[in-house]
Image (cartoon, rainbow, N blue to C red; front, side, top):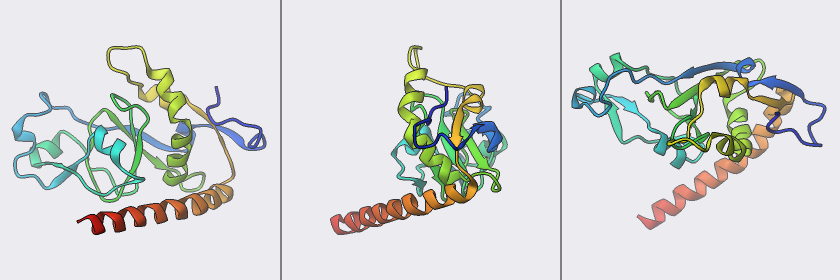
Length: 188
C-alpha cells in the first residue's frame, strides 16, 4: 500500500521511508524507566510521546531531564530530528528544536538532504497519520515497529518540488505558531 497515493501525484516516484534517510529507534535501556537515578543532576532534555503529540511542528520545551546516568543509557539526538511515536500515541510527529533524548517508544528520522527533508516528511506523516493509526489498532496497547515504518511506501516528488511544498506549507505553519505565541502572551 502506498499511503499518500492520489490522482495528483501519479508522476511522483514511489520510495520506502528507509530510502529517504536514517531511521533509528530511541533508546531507554534502564528499567524501571522512572528510576530517580536516571534524572539526578538533570541537564539532558528528555521528550516523551505525549509531548510530541502536543507539539505544534517543533518541540520547543520539555518537562524532564536525564542526568549523566540517564544519558549513558540513552542517546542525545540533534536538533532538526523528526520524532515519530510508535507506541501509545501512534504516528504523532514533531521536530526537535534543540538536542534531546527520547525513549524507545519514539523513532528518530534524519533525512538524506539530497532526496528529502525532515519537514517534508513531517507533512507526509501529518497527511497519512490516520491510516497508520488504523493499522496499529487491536493490541492491548496500540503500537507499530521500526520494520513497519521503514517498509512504508510513499509517493515522493523531486527534492526541488518538496522544497516548494515545504516553503508554502511551512510559511503558513510559522504564521500559525506566531499567532499562538501572541495569544499566549496576551493571555499571560
